[in-house]
Length: 123
Image 1 (cartoon, helix red, strand yellow):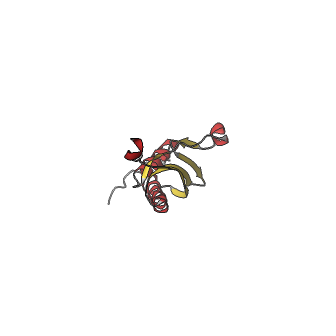
Image 2: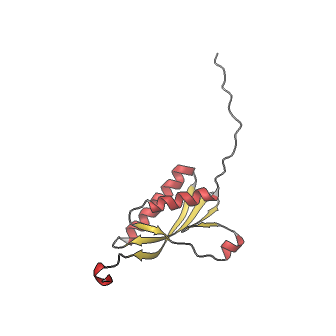
Image 3: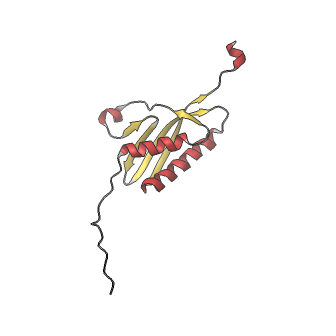
């Protein structure tokens, strides 16, 4: 007769909003063609603290889904559509794999393009 192993009481795991912000931001920065994050503009939501905002990422958790708005500045001469889709795909994957939550809307906002100044123009 085998002895039953004790199991811990079922508990709950809580994910801090900053964890989701960091996952989205770091994943975005790892996508080829992303130069840097662009600050998220303030607004009524920031004053009322209805959602979290940080360094180019705004998240909202609704009905167990993580909705993300990502504000980025891209490198010059990249395919904007391709980079945007790669960001969406990678952020959705990271949220699912790292915290086990369902990704919802992942909106990409291209705020600017980083163009290298021409060396001839500077002289």
